[in-house]
Image (cartoon, rainbow, N blue to C red):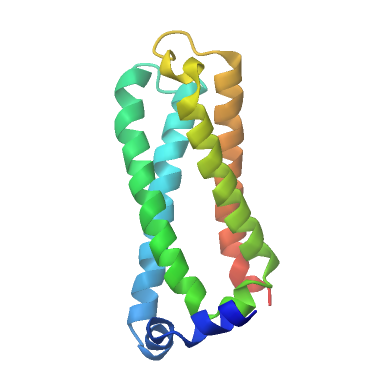
Length: 155
């Protein structure tokens, strides 16, 4: 708890709490970042699951993966800033903990998928295991969004 209190007392966290306009912009940037992640990942997952067949997976995967990675980086930075404003409260907020866990699971799933030989050869026929992993990914990210929206409604 001392580290959370120290984070709460940090100068940048205090500045975020005091500035009337900065916090809403950081919050909006976080939502946009998460939207970038989910939009890119969901499009890629849906392609793996059989939608958008007119677009080659080998053409879609690289730019969508890069956009998702950029979104993750931005979401981590903005999320940390938002967390720093009320770290003690967020550390006890169930939906926040679920969201963070789901986002970590989604990132781990993407890293595992990218490391699999079945993914690297998914230009033609997509294996059932890769499709299952895409379905899990889609579910994880949708639930992360739901959990994120739920944070404000739980004390």
